[in-house]
Length: 107
Image: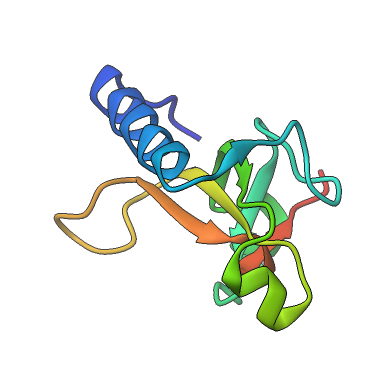
């Protein structure tokens, strides 16, 4: 994993600020997922993803009592992650996805 650049760190901080503006609060962890953990998106189903992960968690946030959490009776948790490589050409390595799209990689 390549460490995030200064620009990527700024992007992650901006994304985190936007989530805070929308009512999300920081969580130190959620179901064992915490900043610094190696993860993969559930859709990434190839050997390297399972073995090494494809991203590192930057932040874990939750929107308490959101409409989504009330409807689905589950926690509304988002993770900001820094991918090892952009998902597609021209995209940032910094992205966010919901906790239910995330699988921890045990090393």
